[in-house]
Image (tube, rainbow, N blue to C red):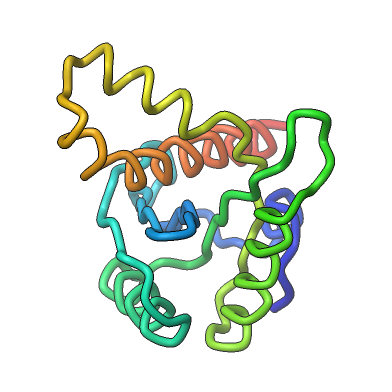
Length: 157
């Protein structure tokens, strides 16, 4: 299945089943998962990026363990709505990853997700070292929760 905006995969998803959220960074990939009813996102792991093949295998394994039905990939759009080099790199990752899975991949605007998570972790009084260890998976959780809320809004129509 091609890589599409999140709202386009809503029509092909069954009513229940987990989704995997991904926050792609240059050095790490944050991973989150939803519950089968798609109400709550939770952090799963931070993958240290090595090579695409190894990173993809780890993501596929996490999705299989959780019986995921689709992926939600954070798309780092600029504040003015344009797409810069990070968004292009994310789209390239998504295109390559789509060749390895039959599951749909939905793109979700992740503007300010890491900044919002960083503020929340600081408010929770986590040390810089502890924040660094969990920020990517929490950013993936933030992205996935936003997507879940949007999907719930579409289903309520």
